[in-house]
Each structure stands twice: as C-alpha cells, then as structure tokens.
Amino acid sequence: MKQYRTKEIYGDLYENEGKPLAVVLWGSRAGLPNNLNENLQKYLEDNYNLLLLAYFGVGSLVETLECVPIEYFINAIRIVQKEYNISDENMVIIGQSKGAEAALLLTEHIKSSITIACVPGCYVFQGLTISEKSQNPVTKESVKNPKSSWTFNGRELSYIKFYFDDEILEAAKNKNFCKCYEKSIEKNYNEDAIISIDDYKGNILLISEENDIYWPSKKMCNILIENNKNKDNLENITLKLEGHYLLRYNESSNVIIEYLQNNYSN
Image (cartoon, rainbow, N blue to C red; front, side):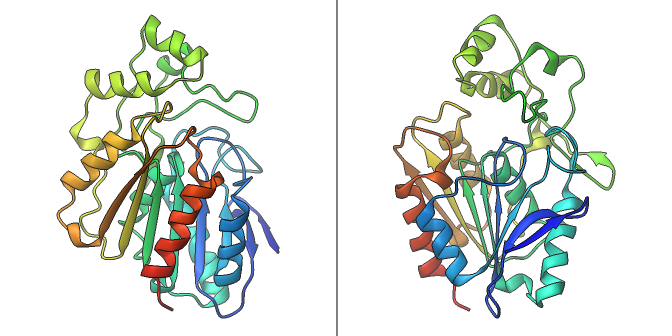
C-alpha cells in the first residue's frame, strides 16, 4: 500500500498492477475513508487500484468541509492516473454522502466509466464547520459566516444556505439532521445549486436510504433522475437500512459489487 501525504493528494493507494482505478470518497467525517465494508474493500483491492482519498481535516488539506476546491479531486486523481497510466475510461468513482455530492460534481470534469453515489445530494449545500473534534454539522456558528462546500477556479459554487430554527437545533442534538436540510431546501432554495449530470456519458448508480436521518437522500435521488436528460445510464436503488454510511454495510456493499460486475468491463 502506497501512502500519499501532500497538499496535492492525501490518500492511501492499494496497488494492483495493470488494473483500473477505483476512487473512494468518504462523507462528512474528516480524514481518510475508514471502516470500509470488508467484502467491498477486498473486491476493490482484487479488481482495481484502490485509492482511498481524503479531502479535508487532515495533513495540509483544508481544515473543515468548507470551500474545498474541486481542483483538488481532479489533480489528485490525475497524479495517480499519470503514475500508473490509467485512462478516465478505466476508472470508477465511488462517493458517500458529501463524498457522493463531490463525485456527482466530478462528472463534469472526469469522464470515468462509472460513478456510484451512495446517499447523495442533488444540490450543492452550505459547507460544514465540522472537524475531527466536532461532528455536529448543525450549529448556530454555521449561520454567522456561511460558505459553500466547494469552490472551482477560486469561486464558491452556488449553494443552498442552511436554515435554522429551534426545532432543527433540537433535532440535531439527537443526531437527526434531515430536518435542517429539508427546511433549508424549502426556505433557501437556489436553482443555481442544482447538480447537473446531463453531460456525463458513463454509468451512474444512485443508492439512497429509505429512513435517512442525515438528509433526504431518497427525495434527492428522485430529483436527480427527474432532472437528468440521459436516463439510459442511470440506475436508482433505495434500501431500507438503519444508518447513513452505506459503504460500511453488507447489503449496500453487495449492491455495489454486483453493479460493478455487471457494468464494468476492462
């Protein structure tokens, strides 16, 4: 396993000579993806060069999930592609939660063969002021100086700002953040924040969670489908699991493995 620890790329690469590249992006937890489902990780290690990529909260990367440059993902992936001579067509990108938001945004810049978005958003949202020390994304501090989650060419991507009231803050204390996102969409809707995947020619798998308490992933997957002009490359699956972190669970991991087996040919 090769470690990258620079501001250009912070990740762990499980090398597999001659194989395609699979990039995994975690959600709103700082640092490297961790506790990836054992069966899923073994499948990816056996069939791909597996890059677990961090994008905030560790090393010299941005401290919080605010104004993360989209160029960071592009450049980090290009470094590995160049080093191992891997084309876009021989690559899959797998993201979870905020990492799925990033993965969908990357469809405009990297023409990978497959994008798998687990519990994704269909909008760019306000950035999260969380770090390794504080995992609560819904706080009164968030409203004082709102910023986008992402930037490109030095400019913040248009985003939906968080809306707060006592009900939202109380729900957040119990780690239920869905109400914040639902009301934010309702109160602070921003058409420019919609994520477009129209120009992507690869295959897309969306996996949502029926009882998602983090954000309304099922509703947002349906919006992605409704908005997308190219329906032929898009598959949507909703699971009934207790939890948000689908890259850790057997059922969702089996769905991903089966999808890759059926849709990727080297």
